[in-house]
Amino acid sequence: MAISVTIPLDKLLEIQRRIRVTVDAYENLRTLEPIQPFRAAVENLRRTLVSNWLDEEEKEK
Image (cartoon, rainbow, N blue to C red; front, side):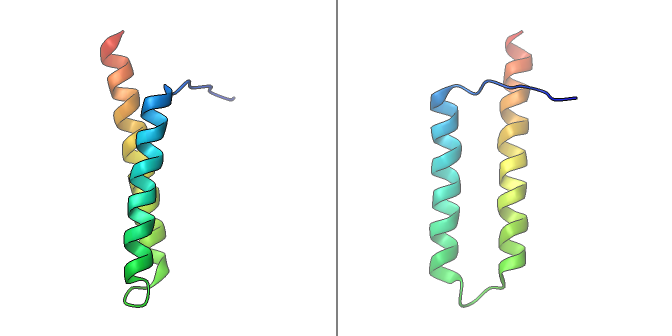
């Protein structure tokens, strides 16, 4: 079963900006940290952003 979600452009751009900031920060520190924690952090950030957005959508209904 597939679920389709429409994300407003401003929310999508904010998610993209936050991920870019996280990636830029990692690029600056990548010689100091292994990549696996970074991947987990990016995934957690993505889940949190999507979850928060879905919570906001639910509150608006």
